[in-house]
Length: 217
Image 1 (cartoon, rainbow, N blue to C red):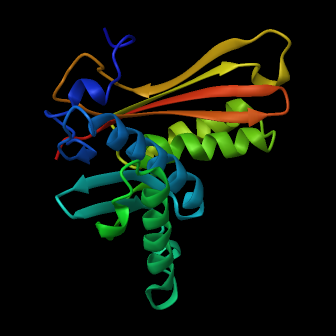
Image 2: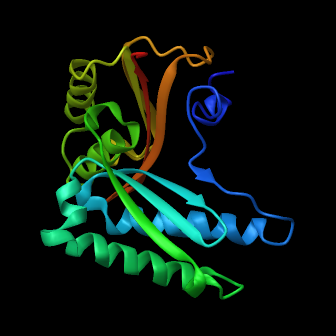
């Protein structure tokens, strides 16, 4: 079961809250969903230097609240809040360009920035870090072993990292796994963070999957 079901989707409503909180009728649902996906993709690309790990989107009648979870809040906020204002205008432009009903101008946008206390306990940030190092052609075993060690030192119960593709430029694609501690995927009450990050190397894409079992509070 653990290999077939998305670990975070499996726990939504039990361990994790919904990252998109709004109601859409039959006509508007698909447009709002596509808008959320496009906005998240654009923000992850734009705010990569800030260490963006998660984007929460909450919609009410005339307001859209976007919460950004970042490891370096100062990069987003900028000097005197100028960066935050630029990000807000960027989100407004994105909503306007992706809104089929052209009602984004009437919607008020609010942006909140939440700091991530321990980046090594967030699967997406760990995956991005590994992807960046693999793209620089660093030895994959050393990169993954160091990542596993950092995650365990940060206080995780367990971690699993899987690589798949032409690792180290090999002719034949293969899979490799690096594990430490325990990662019980079938236990719903366990707080397991999961992320899939592609790394574009000279030989092609290498897929990176990261599972982190965090300690329950």
